[in-house]
Image 1 (cartoon, rainbow, N blue to C red):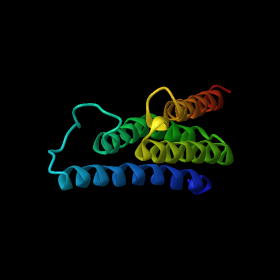
Image 2: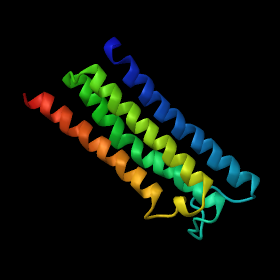
Image 3: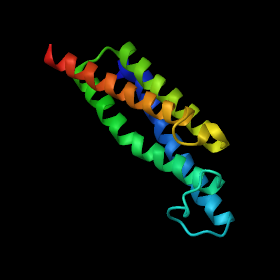
Image 4: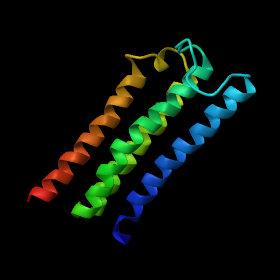
Length: 137
């Protein structure tokens, strides 16, 4: 496992991002006098809605990424290859978060934010394919 230390740090950073966003979302709702749970109505111009959605996006993207990372380690995917994929995914998720939290046109669906989300999904797909390849060969 020591060979995968960079990948492990990247996964831990993704987990930390999700936890930090949970705290940020909960405290933002508390300070605004809102109950926990989804922010309704769904309005990208509402900062509370964006904070809630970026938190949920991070949670939704975490498990489908972490499971293949662990399987890649078990399968023996090259540590450098895995680290590049993990850190690329982390970078995409961080930029996605920053753009969504900032708001404006880039935060609305169908634009930069969506391109980043799809890019993260493509990194996951590459990870899955690489891991499958290593297992099959």
